[in-house]
Image (cartoon, rainbow, N blue to C red; front, top):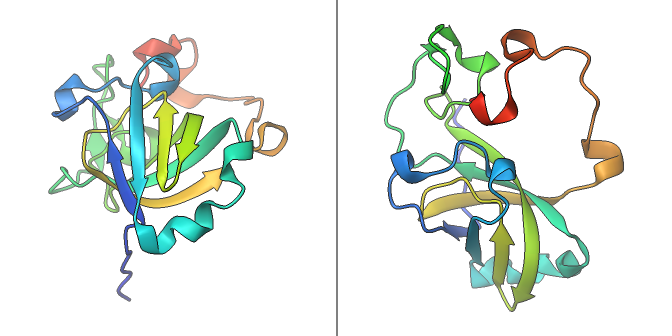
Length: 151
């Protein structure tokens, strides 16, 4: 089976290299960027300005291979790739909840970004705190590790 995605836009951030990016956008709410949604998809932005937060799903375009075992940021223990949020995945897809600051035509101004400049955007979903936020009973290997020290 072959799966092909057609990016709907591009994410622009101040981060030119992966090493410059925050580990998690939620920990850096002041990190700003914008999304240029391609004009042919702009109609799909109708009513989006009513949401304070969005879920961006994107392609890690700077990743050229994957590993099934990787070391999370700030942890020396190798972990399975599906138990961390690292980008070197079999399907290099990322997801970040961002704050929607304003909308101008087909441009979304956002904050809380943690992706490299030029990242292809695959999808946008509205964030519903009453559905999307969960209280986790278990956090696996990250139990007791401060959020800014997790991958």
